[in-house]
Length: 214
Image (cartoon, helix red, strand yellow):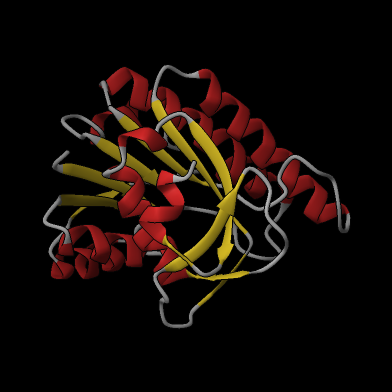
């Protein structure tokens, strides 16, 4: 696997994933919404594509996936976003991206989802978000892609530890974004992680060991 596309490459998680994959020697490209974000992405060493997830069609997304081995979807709506934005970014855009990946012949599709997505909890807006993600997760699982769905709990900007707790179901907890980026790189280089879904928080097991235990 030599090429990867990060959707949401300017976000706090996406930018770390780009850096992690570049350090690993992959040829990396990313999608961003604004020209100034594209300039910053190119300065990091990655190629940039302007793509607005609220309006991009499946065909437009497939175009930027041409020749790509793996897609990593890290985009998400921000806290307090309107429900129609949540429906698109956390729901319909993921569905279109997965369909585009199938159309473009992508091998691996890694989706950053959310902890406890299969449950309804919290206020009305949280439940709305979870249901949008739930629909998207289910669609990704229905595709023939080599998908992996990662469901982290609260993400922090702290330093990486290199260790996690992951499983079909894990307790509430926190995870440094830098460790999530390392986990995504490990997923892309661990064939047995394909067609698996798991939750993850910070823990004491080295990332690759935890993946191999799946």
